[in-house]
Length: 332
Image 1: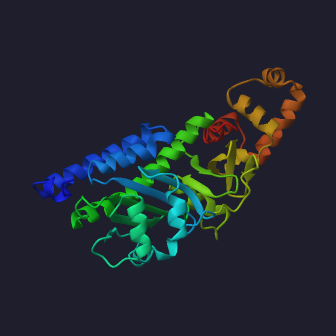
Image 2: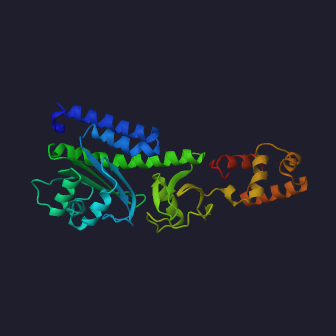
Image 3: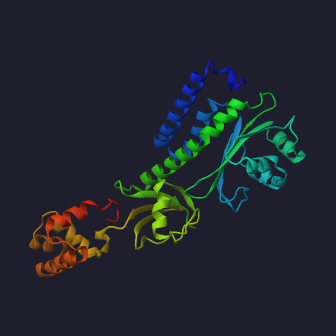
């Protein structure tokens, strides 16, 4: 396995390769199915920084435990790797290094660096001899994200250039992972949304899995002291109707899709009032509205009066304008 430094003849070539990798990472985020994304994104990284195997971990603590692990993906490593690592985790020298150098890529050579016998034994069992690792916290969800890549004893040590590129790529890999998860969940639920809707996903315990950047800021309008990853509400409800925001919640198995948007004037209306307002804003007459939803024209007139009062408007054009501002979620 050649060293990365030998791949490039100039700084321009390095920047060009880095740019191509980023473009591919974000293409994969948009196009790759959820179950294939982590594998293909690591293959993309592997084309720039060669490695034999990898561990992508996401959890609520920096020192991962089974209870704190949120997701765990192994590339060319067996499923029992986590159990083997967990038994010797207190002797893993990489943990101390990533804590001291948070956000920076650290590199370890099990042959030449001062490391524990337990870590050497783990490397021998799973056929790696060199480790490069970086740890990041997701500023939105508060979850810890860690990526370790491994080389065997016949491969060169990770170079300084590779560490720099790995460190620079990690925030993009995390952003792409979040984009991919939300995009796939959105498609899975068959949801439609307008530009004002902010998306996130969580599990049935209310622990965020992924979210768009504006999600935290929007949630904090209602819950100013909130900082992830644990949501401040129960996701098993169908919706959250607060003073400042509305969150529509859709569930499929153990995944919950959250569609959040700032509260609008229309949200003050009851379900029946919204039905009437929608048709009235579209130009329906009282009689047509009554026939459409099965009520009397006098009841329609009553609802229109109530709508004017609640929305503080005086004509059909104002109602149409407010209706146009509603985010197009499944609940509207």
